[in-house]
Amino acid sequence: MKNIQIRLATDKEGSCIIDLLKETALWIKNKGIDQWTYLLDGGEDEEIIQCIVNKETYVVINDEEIMATFTLYLDQNDWDKHIWGEVPPDSIYLHRLAVKPKYMKNGISKEIFNWINNNIQTDKKYLKLDCVCGNEKLNQFYQNSGFEFLGVSNEHSKYQKLL
Image (cartoon, rainbow, N blue to C red; front, top):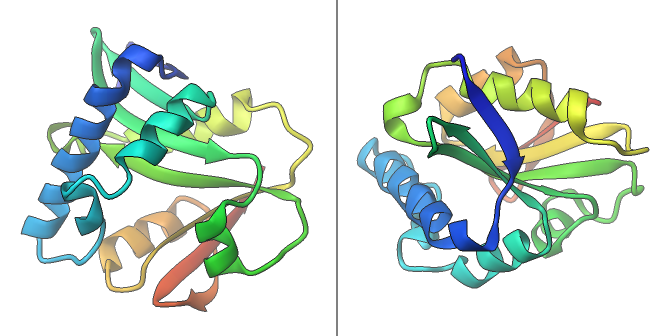
């Protein structure tokens, strides 16, 4: 898509980001995929707001509308430790990558991956993420986007990509 801007989220955008994540979670649920249902009842609202305050959450904007969001952790959070175990501190972790359903299939996620590669200044070597094993389309998408499948932990596929 043309004219998209990616930037850090502002404190004022917290409710919009939560709404976008819930909209995406509902879309996923309606597709029969068991992923992100905890977001629908506010399961991570506080963490989402804290990530915005900590300047870890980004928004993708087109014509002043937030069309996507993602969060980057420079260090493992508790979930990452649960999925990846204690690993060398050579990675950043991508969480809550969500594109509004009406903007899906427009290459926005690939734009995000390119933006991360070109704009995040870090000495880390890898971008890591995980997703539920049962979401076949999402797993295939990550593999098609250049992520290496590293195995399964707690019913989640683990992926990494060189930065």
